[in-house]
Length: 339
Image 1 (spheres, rainbow, N blue to C red):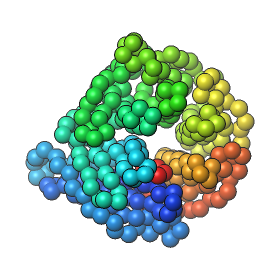
Image 2 (spheres, rainbow, N blue to C red):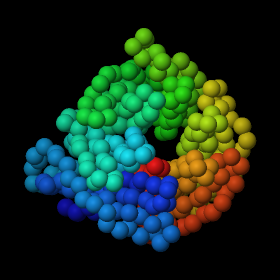
Image 3 (cartoon, helix red, strand yellow):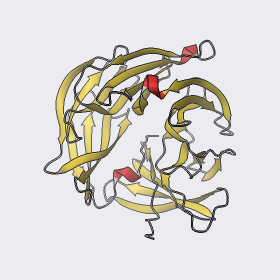
Image 4 (tube, one colour):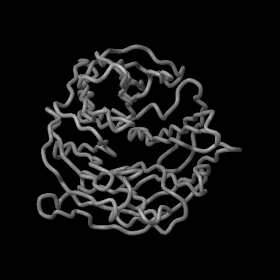
């Protein structure tokens, strides 16, 4: 049996003040289950050791593996540089749990609970109300939106339950406005995969109604939405939209979160030859008003990879810089956020 690479899961933290990055890397099997946190230099594209951490998992057979994948990350305290992330899996046998880490003190805890056959599609943190919540896949048919305690990581309450046959596949992208207290998901219909839907959930209805979905309508635009970066100050989303059958040609546009309507459109990135885009992530620095996009490409035989970083001004859609980053690292192994 082939031994898969140890590196299966990397999380990236960007410190705006020092313009430095960090990478979290748990291993795939144990016990003991350990990982490292490395700093990342965007100039030299080098990783340097920062700290170790460990986490507990139930005993398994010596021949078994736990297959970790990058989970969503939220910043719950920018001043104290504290994050919460999901340690989750590609396969159904690896237990899902939450993990909280404080970067300056190098202290951490993991949730006391673990769930098999489940993953988080996203996590959001509401700093106005000091609450953490996320959308979790219960099974092939049901998703639940749940709140968790940021100190203990324990379950607090369920906000709503979503039937996939009614509201489609889990969101490719999601944004949250803590001022107006809503979430927007972009979903794919189950019966018509080429149909993309705009869905808004009003969190003010939590505890008042079982169904908190207030808007669910089809987007009348050809292609698929790949990335959505939200600016809570201007109340608009910067969107990357794929206009080809496969992910090869991206345009950038703005979306009004109140109506789901799009306006302005400019070319962004086009893959050449037999290459297509298989992973893209965005990092928005509100202080500079710039978005850093991490794009990973694969060829159609799926035997090669390539990767780029593209820096864009949020307000003007001006592409500032494009840099090839492969073979230094692959974005699919990372998740990014700003402190």
